[in-house]
Image (cartoon, rainbow, N blue to C red):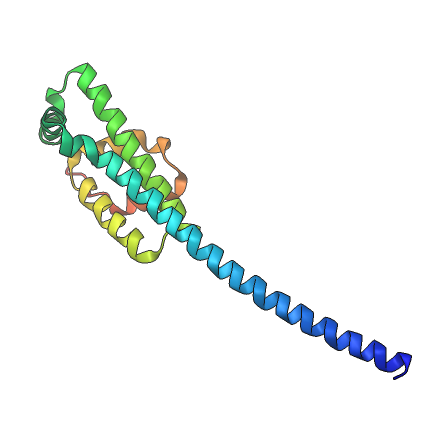
Length: 155
């Protein structure tokens, strides 16, 4: 075996090593993507449950939220501030969800579930009015999405 044969053998071995490395990297990338999506799913679910917890765990909060939905004009200034904080928190959550969906870490099926919930909440005039008054608190992409789903104002 001469030097030229050794060079060709080394090139073949090197090429095989590159292919094996690429296959390994591809497998690792797929595994990492699945792990990232699972982590995102877990975080989104935890955040959603944290937002729902006061509604399910506190009769006082449920009554307050019911009044805010049905007759927001009856809220005291302190209750109005509380409602603003609740709605801002929820819209920030949707902002994050929409970002995760657009960046590919939240799958379409999960996003569509949250998007339907967003549309249902926007059907309530108190939430729709809050968004119209406070849209600048959210990202432009969420503002565009919400404006397309807001019910048309009467009159």
